[in-house]
Length: 86
Image 1 (spheres, helix red, strand yellow):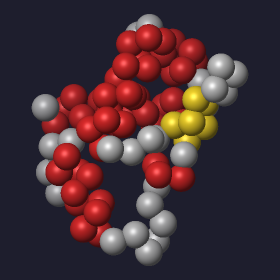
Image 2 (tube, one colour):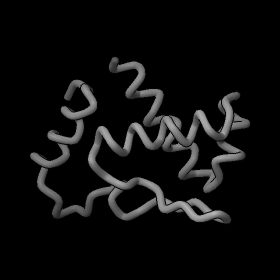
Image 3 (cartoon, helix red, strand yellow):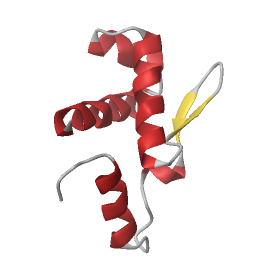
Image 4 (spheres, one colour):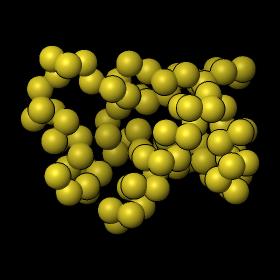
């Protein structure tokens, strides 16, 4: 379970870096559809929209990184939701 969550986070990081599902999927060796479903599942588990998607672009939302004033308790709750140890 934790390894799957780590892989999902790594996939998200690559999509955010590349700003493209196509390029990220090619690097990961998976289909765009499979990658999109992975990110969608991660967003649902976290209860946050991580990426803004349009037909021509992908961009990380502000939710992907909490501001410095964001309480640690919320970050811990998000990690707990996806089953990652602290």
